[in-house]
Image (cartoon, rainbow, N blue to C red):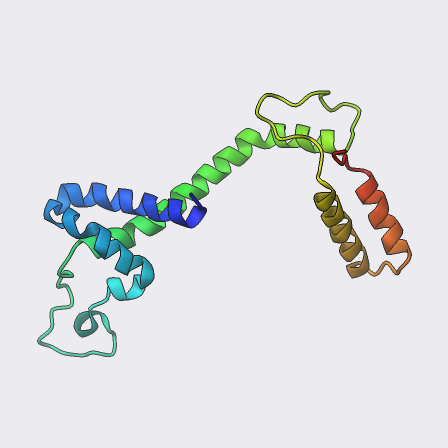
Length: 167
């Protein structure tokens, strides 16, 4: 499941929780409503006769609720899921930071790096393609910093040579 699909599913799950409590009769149309919402998030929660600021009609009560609660539940759930995802990312980043640093140390062949990876850690060696990308990044950054060729290439080679490449 990609990030977009996972996010959509989480939004749908949260909206389902809200609807189960507040409008259970709308659960039957939630899948269809969510497809429309994800295709056109603004349109799904806008009533042209009520929500447009350019409409000034005294006969329209601007506090009128949308006909369905489902689009509103989806529209509320989306930023909540985005926030929860951000919190989870921060928590995971903090939790895995030491392991990430250990992996980087092994890739950089640091003497104080653990000799072996912890169970579940990715291999501490880059593919040849990844090593070429490391060199490209280093080379482009050196040029951006004003280092001229061939010195930029020499520095990029030194950076690329400082990482472990799988054999």
